[in-house]
Length: 114
Image (cartoon, rainbow, N blue to C red; front, side, top):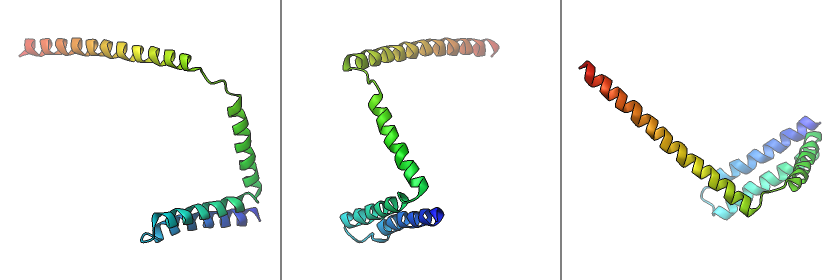
């Protein structure tokens, strides 16, 4: 029975997408409403399946985990960004110097052989 419900949910979702493209001559608002209705009906049907309930539970648990995350302060974010920018600029100059040095060596060797 779950597979039938998931199939119906998939058909409803696809109907929303096909409706969006089928109604090309309609106003954008109508097209978006058709798309959202198809996806909403698909979601409602999917919530009546075991997999849908598990997915909803997973999303709910994910939101709870995100609430537990300790986000850095503005000062910490700016300091970290500054360190990253300084490292990138330093590495850019280092790689430019290595590249220029190797190019000079290659030019020297090529001129010597000619």
